[in-house]
Length: 238
Image (tube, rainbow, N blue to C red; front, side, top):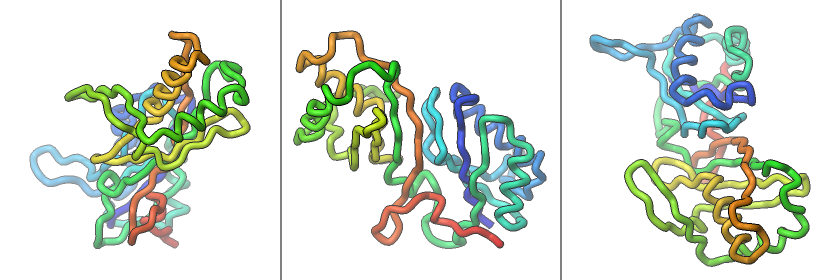
């Protein structure tokens, strides 16, 4: 039986690495007596896979881990059992059964991610004075930024990967960005490009860009030509 668990990672654990979260979940599943399946061979380990890893220092309410189990109680009871053993800073939000057939792997189905981003300090630049620059920045046919990966660094056009972008009245940015193994854009790249745009326009002194506080809202996949939350690939068990 395939299960998708949705969980949040809050301020208390935002500097805990993805590897540590993986190890923690293995222990939490054992403590909650989840009937998780194990791989075969000389070194069995729990059958589990995480969706797109969260960046260090970021928080989220849309994290996912897929597991396989031999048996399960109703979803509400499993959520309660897991939260009873979770450390402060991680909360299980959903426990849903995935279809036995079809493409369901979390990492393979990711198409987009939603983020909310705050600037620190919040009074960095009055929103009203930079809103026009933000709109002009997004109106470009191409937004070329310098990006580094583990294997290479190069200039790339990120404009096709920005699916939606708003600068909200509360001073935060809402970003819906392409995500997944093939096309993946980080919110830092979008805003670093914007800060460079401000510097070139003379609206921001060089070297004075603000820090970012990034919160992931959810991850989405494609199903039947529609974008849906990874959580909605599964169904609650009753």
